[in-house]
Length: 381
Ligand SMILES: [Fe+2]
Image (cartoon, rainbow, N blue to C red):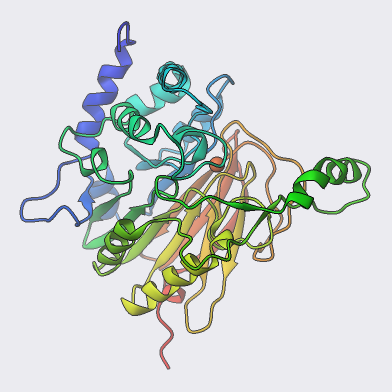
């Protein structure tokens, strides 16, 4: 990119250091080891590992929240999608929007100084709520890989989607991070036309205090072939879940556990959601927690399915965007945080705890959930 600010070069160098290459002997299906500054020292001292995440950052808005994220000193930051808003119907506009993203100074300076990984969601993939039908997805994939410093040989550049898994290892502990692509292969959503047409009336009623909650207009897709991942990504995910790990973090740009929002989420693809739960059982894959974004509020959801350990879904959204309309979610465990926010995970191996927080832009933890690592085990019966 011409006239790139000097910190982009720093970013590239830093990412090369942070995103170490695939270890010798590993296959392409294996999680990519990440060498994180300070993680070995933290592990040697028995202190918690700290990971942060966030989503939904509009490039035209000020992004002061990066100061608070920086002050939290996470070992790794995970960009959960809608990392900027392309909303582009032409290749020219898509390129233009990417160029704008690369000029967001607070965000890019944070990237230059801190190890990070990224997945995308609809807006940075292409356009509002789009999936596999987006006509410029190959270009978008290349722009994504360039912007996020993917190596020239990275499979993310050539396979059908930017899905990728990583591994953090220190002090005899191992955390697997599985980043999904919920856009490239996704079947189109099904909308309820009546809800869509009646939405403005509902919003007006809510503004007048006549409606407690307002859901969106999407309904579950009844087609058993409808998919979020596509066949190749399912096969890849199955291989990931067969790998051993003390903790698995599933990066899902949209919510997995939430139900009844009427907006985007795995609940719109019930067959695919069941398939994921079946896959966990099949591989006896333990220690999985889900991170999500997209909603423009932060919250905790918990899915309790028969014969499965509780699946926590920790949503942080947005870094700039806020949706103050009360939205239903049958799996919500405490009130949403409808303010600009980021997520923090402190993995305390000594105490056997995952402490999850949703923090405001001053860095204050405003919603918290303590999860016992022992509870993320397969039920012994
Ligand atoms: Fe989104």
